[in-house]
Each structure stands twice: as C-alpha cells, then as structure tokens.
Picture 1 (cartoon, rainbow, N blue to C red):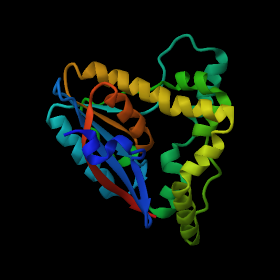
Picture 2: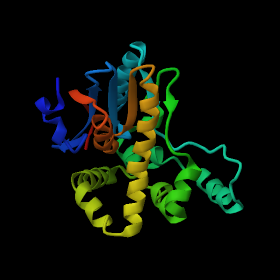
Picture 3: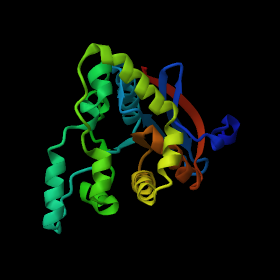
Amino acid sequence: MGADLYGMARRSTALETAGGRVRTAVWTLAHPEVGRTVTLVGTFHIGHTEYFDELSALLARLAAGGAEIHVEGISRSDAEDLSDWELERLAEAAAWPEPETAGAAVALLHLDSQGAKLHLPAGARNVDLTEVDLLRRVGWKGYQRLFAPEAPPARAPALGPLARAFIRAQLRHSRSFDRLRSLRRSTRRRARVVLDERNAVAFAAAAEALGRHDVALVWGADHLPGLARLFRSSGYLVHREEWFEACRL
C-alpha cells in the first residue's frame, strides 16, 4: 500500500502531545520492487517502564524476523589525530552526568530513561557521529549547549507539578521555540548537524545493510520525518504506523 493512502506523505511529526499524553510513532516502510522493509522506531528518551518494555519487545520481534537493528548514539572516537584542545574538551565532557538520567523529568516525575530501560537485541549496531565529529562540526559552545548539565533539579516533591507543567509547555510549543532559535546562524548550523547530518549517516548505513537484511532504525522521534523523506526518495513507501505512549505529563 502507498504512503498517500494513509496521509503519511504529509506527516511532519512522529511525536504527539495531547491531554498530557506523550506518544511516539513507529513507521514501517517497504520497497515495492526490492522487497525490503525499513522500520523507523521513534523514541522519547524518557518515559514509563512500560513504554520501554513495549519498544524492547518490538525490537526483539524485528530482530527475530531477521532485521538488522541500528541505534543512534554519539559514540566515542578511536581517532588518533585529536589535538590537545580536543582531548581536553572531550575529557571535560566525559565527566558530565548523563542528560537522560540527570534531568528534572526523571528526578521529579518518576520516569525512566531510554538508556537504562530500553533493551536492545544482540547484534544491534550503534550508527551515528562520533564525539569528535560532533565537536568539530558544532564547536565547543554548541557541544556544551547539547550536552552540558544544567543546574541540579530541586528534589522537593512539591516541585513535581511545576516540572510537569514546564515540560508539557516545552513539548507543546517546541516548534515555536525551534523557529525562534533558528533565526540565529549558530543555531541553524547546530540543527543541521544534529538532525540532517546525523540522519544522512543513519540513512547511508541502512542503505548498505538493506542489501543483506531488513533494517530497523531506533532514533529520537524528531529524526523520523527526515529519515522517512530519505527512504521515500529511494522508492520506499510508508504503509503502516503504530503509536506508543511514553508517559503522561
């Protein structure tokens, strides 16, 4: 079945928020001629344990059916040509706490993180830019904006509703915030690297693997529209979507 039958050709988001519910999409694309299938598994990096259990079960089924699993994640670099400055900056960043587990949502809203709760099948491949790739593309200030820890969240239970309201507003108005931030050249460049360039890396690895197997890509939901466009430009059609509830805010 073609993508247009489901209106998927015009879909621009794989993350929905309504009534405090946060849901992410899983899109299945198939090539009508070569017979390969690509599954784009959108994730929200924090959520209830049940959410990650459902996605883990989905990935296990895909792997059991022969799909190769590719997972996003900025990886450490094995490059030997790092400058002293790059080594110092990456050593500093290595001491930062993990953003997923240190954030207010995990601390105050009793949510879990993808890194802790999503179980990947054996043989899953990390396909992404490396730390030094990202540092060289966005610069140190951009790297800090992406990964540097914010002030530790207050632990008082009374702040839970405030954190909940703040995160809900961020999600609801994220596109408006993105448009405002995109007026700055440095922000536009950072967005191109974080979304477009990483999507290109993911697509290239998947295109190579599709010569052997079906492929499933596990990426943050913001990446799915761009990834879907890349695969559709290669003849793949979206013929199914599922939605998974990450949490209620």
